Amino acid sequence: MHPTTPPYLIRHLDGRTEYEVLSAQVMTWRRERELPAESARPILDSLRDEREMAVLVDTDDNAFVACLQLDRTALAAPPWTDSDTAQPTLALSCAAAAPGVGYRIGWLLTIWARHYAALCDYTRVACTVPLRHHRDSAGERLIGHLVDECGWNRHRSAGPPDGLVVLLTADACRADSLDAFITTEIPVLPAVSAEKEPAS
Image (cartoon, helix red, strand yellow):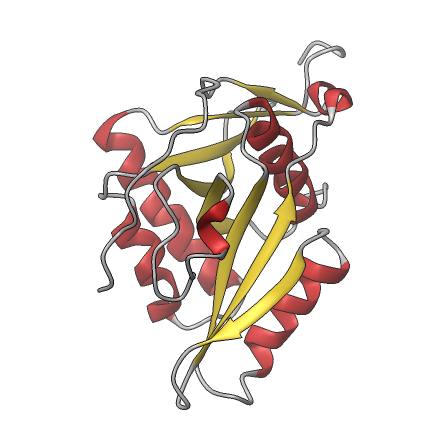
């Protein structure tokens, strides 16, 4: 690899073959993290929907190291409310990363997402973390990591008594020095107003 080449490239998946490769990778990442197989199902299912799945690629060996889905439609209600959707927001979901990667991938992807959102004239990014129950320690650890290590803000919690969804947000913010770490091949598209998705 040329010394001036950024270590990572982020782009859309390219065709069905890459869908299948990423599906297998996500399952492997889950097993290596000693997570239950069913935790990968929402990610694998999402690979076939209409939203955009981006992959972070190691430019040294062309291997997938992470994936992240971008949703340019309006935030779904519930759990988001009318006041939540008052500003243009780029929703992120179905993130997964390979264990043991040298860089802080969660932090790096957050910086990239905030930067990309700013380029597209969104005012913030948002994501949700489901908790299986009120004492879901694994979910709370993930939320703590996203808040303390990756720069997310805990917006609020929503959901029925037997399960919660924690809503997280982060302001869009340009990070022009990011080009030294990630080459972006995802087109910059202006933020659009979209009708709210119906509740499922």
